[in-house]
Length: 505
Image 1 (cartoon, rainbow, N blue to C red):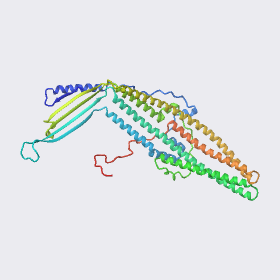
Image 2 (image 1 turned 60 degrees about the horizontal axis):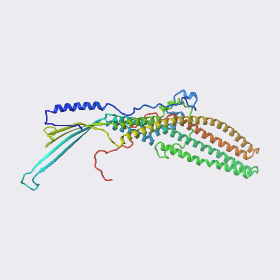
Image 3 (image 1 turned 90 degrees about the horizontal axis):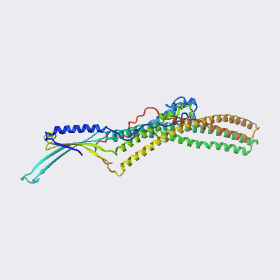
């Protein structure tokens, strides 16, 4: 360590020493910004397909229209639930806290670029000779006061601190993108659970209507039995069929209750909070028109999970440079100023003043391979995030393709089911008419009713599936909440954090 010490009473060398210090300080400041080591981050080039195999040309000619895509389902209740979920969901609150953490970490890293300054003070009173009970003899009492100022600055010769700030900045970007990814998942989950709940309500209503109709048929069969035109077997089958259909109702009610519980928790509320609000039956939301998909390259900017993975890759690329900087020498500037006197008023005036200033050079010579191993650790971590980015892109491509295929297939299935329902409705009407006049057996009526109920129930499930695959496509394309999100407010507000006495609990 090169150091300079000068007493305040040594006047002749003061000017020369000060000039020496100023020259040394200027040189070290210049050196502190000379170089950074390690790789500079560049976004990796990713090969993307030119088109979606599951989408037609008209869908791909326009960019994805993802802003508040759920409003296309034309359900005001769903719109309100999504807004409440964005405000109250606990996963969103956690993501906000992570943003605050990342921002604070960045400010902490920036602080490493600047000098540190600390002050100290001391006061003492002493007595020499004599005793407290003696009135004679020589004794003297004196006071001593001292004050000091210490400063240090680690010069960032090879960019370790700058790489740390760079990594922390990318970390903020990743945390903000992660919040957006959380919102994409949340909006999709709320919409899916809501559609599921409305689907079970529709199936409950269908089962009740069908069971009531089957009970009427059973009553007619009992009347015909009394008249001798029907058998006891027909009566038993009719009553059993009505009971079998009614047995589906509690199962569907159970599934509906579970969806309501899930929705409530997604909103950050107790499971039964929405039970009364969603009790009234409403139609299954259905998308009005196709969702433009754009081209596969669009997901690189629209999917926040891909953005998160890319920012994390950038963050850990900067960490490689931070680790490599430890292989090079480091220089720190330290300085101190102290003064002492017998009176407080004498400090910095007639008291003794001393100071020191100088750089410290540290050169890593032998560390047992630790520093080089730390670089390899950072490189391996960077590679993991590069692979994670590629995996995120492939997963996103698969998500979109799956949703496109599932949606198209389910639409075709719904068309066939619609035709089947119409056919079974006609067959059921004819069977009931012919059975009442005695021209057809009850077995034909039973088969027609059973087939109609099964087709109608499948049609409801298909309607739910279409909307859920539409939701899945919007999620896969990166559609989520695009409004402003305030992440600056903490979930827990501390009070009385200053110095205070600890009371009994």
